[in-house]
Length: 575
Image (cartoon, rainbow, N blue to C red):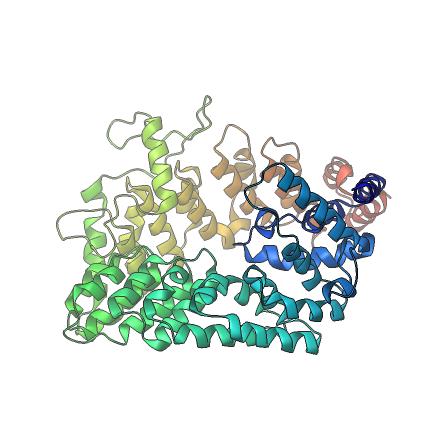
């Protein structure tokens, strides 16, 4: 026991002397030392996490550079030598645990074999594989070895894996096999996984369909589609439920191949009511094949552009032109249906909150702050008072459907802008935002008429307005925009003003960026700093502008002395 105590003391002394080493080395030593001391794998690693095994493989190789005495030798693995440092420590720990009445003695061979399977010497790894078949918990490391570079080790590991991988092990190890499968020689494991799972009953793949690992879900669904493990209704449900776009397309297309005139709601309904637009668009396209093309009209006002496009295609197959429907719906959304608001009326910022005051149409009273906040949230999502997916507005109901507004622009003509201009005064922020987007899509933007919307209380409206006015940024009065950079204005107004000023000409972008260098908003301040560093005197800027020198002098902390002199030289100042 004295020898073991001396070895343990030497290990402790070495650990203290290595304290200044890198943090990664400390973590590596912690894992490797615990395994070398005989602690079971399940107490050291998260055995259900595939990255734990690949990390262990790397950690052991790193540890071999600093603490090779912790790793088992080739002679020990082959059973030709006496105790090593690691085996002595493991034996001591095992005896201590037995003396303290542990429920079961710690088996020290398995963790040491785990270290041997990750040993940098290929001969040690090959010898460890011969003993690893007796320990099922080491199967994940055999998966890792089946993709390694050394051919003798790799071929031995592949034979072991082929013999040991049954359906239960394949389902449990699928995340690790697919992770290792990304390596140059990892294709064997992926092929073997597919062979085993193809022979299994379809219901055994259930845990893989709901795996948190996206790669595993994709593999399982591809296999299920190829082998027909899932029914059309289950495929439709997977397309509607899964958040991965690849799985959505894969399952939706597979479900649509089975659609016929007698298809039931168990297939179409999950697609048509799905939250993701890929599944909804597939469901809308399938309506024609199912003989229910008339139902596609409900989706003409969907919140997704791809769903609206599919709905227009299906409606046109019936001989119906969707454009008159959009025109009728937008006419019902006009001022006579929802109340008119004067968009040319300027709104001053409210001193207390910084929000713009929005007068009511009839009374002129300030907009209630709670209502303004609600409208701002609605404009951000674009779902304000918008019908549920697949429910278009009914004629005469005057339901505010933003999808109808943008839909008119998608398939209409420039003359249809006459129906969109009044909607800039609509009380629903999402409708105003879609109206601005529609005018931009029809290429009928009038900077003078849209400029007041830069003060709109809804961030979504201001964002669309800024995007529409960006090509006309140099035509906007820079002083008016500079005023809206001030802190009393809401953040979305200040961001839009800064973007438009940054697209201006001459000294305007520099002037706007310097104005925000000390702004309390960290994002705005960061954007301003980047804009200053990107600015170069444009062609046509008069040389020797005193304002340019004054502005650059306020930015000395953003440049080295050489770059600052160079920038001033380009502007013809500071010579």
